[in-house]
Image 1 (cartoon, rainbow over the protein chains, first blue to last red):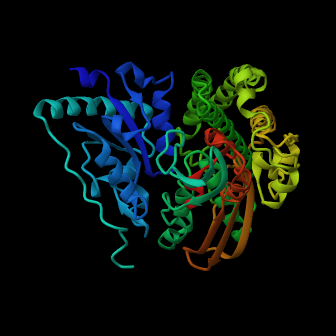
Image 2: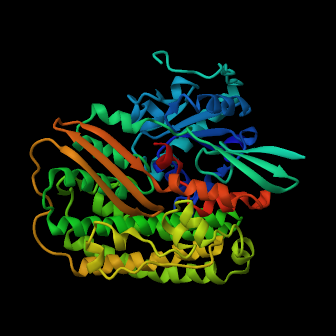
Image 3: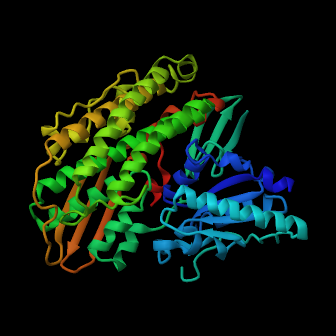
Length: 156
Length: 358
């Protein structure tokens, strides 16, 4: 039970409008206080257990996201926060947007909403904790995501 | 020998992905090269497929922090194309929500800035006070972050008596809390140690580099679009721009602290003068012609250019955002700064990357 009592999260902003980001940061502040679940926001992927991703993926940051995912040690859980991270949201048709985060890396839990409330994000984190514990028990390893060169749109 | 250190795109201090290649001599920055595009979605092209009403919602999602003012500026630009008279009550509602948006944005920035130099308790304090503003915004508009208060032709929601009581009650508490914060930001040893005399931007440089907003006013240039631009309502509300003359990180912080009082005053005055009547005029037809609208966002001047061609879809939408105008001055002030101070200097222009790259 030790891991789920003190999960460290890394917050990754890939292509977000800041709306979900400020709500993720608001979760860590006194009113919502994610630290009561032992959550600690950490800047480096090498020390993180849960990846909180906001925003959709575009052609410039796709490799940044893959790179960060590969660096997070096993067991790892990815939480997609917001409509953009889940499906691409209202930006899914834009020329530079690939789509939701699950197009690129495996996602374990989704928090819908534009923007989701901090309570909803906390619910997502708590859901991620049990997934994390199960992954640890089953010794589930995340696959390494292959990095291609600069991915360019096929119609470009 | 010089070393090049990449700063970002993933960095603990930055909430957003921006990449700066810092050229260092020992520990001192001698050059900085930004790399942009990590948050580019292509919204100005995207509006081809949306009609002018739907574009309001796209514009609000350019940035989550100043979303109300993006929506307001866009709708005011399109109203110029239609050349219609907007009910006065709608204009006042826009001012009230826009200024509430500025209060929350400045409190957010003050918190992030305090976190930038490791003053975590101050960060938590600012964000705690900010929640009261967000609660009121949620009660008025229905969402904490994306407010959608403005639509083409007026305001989308009306302010009721209870809303106004809520706002006034919240302003009283927030004002006394801001007074506490002011004491810390102006007098505290830690804050002064890290900000006084750091990254001084002269009046001349700030003007020539085309800086806008609190960054420009922190260098002693008296320029605030709420006084100057087409939005005359601010003249009736007794608005006075906040200007500090030193041009360092400390005076840029002071501008934002004192602007909180100014915004609170504006909201109170707008509520006391709030006229009765309709909140929206019906709009018919399709937009034609060109229009430019400028307003003062929390981060500075934003310029919207819209061009209609007689169809439901706009032909062209061009946005110049405040951070885009502030980046050149940042690159000019970075040389000579110690590497450890770079995060603070970057934060003092209040960078909003998702605005800049859209």
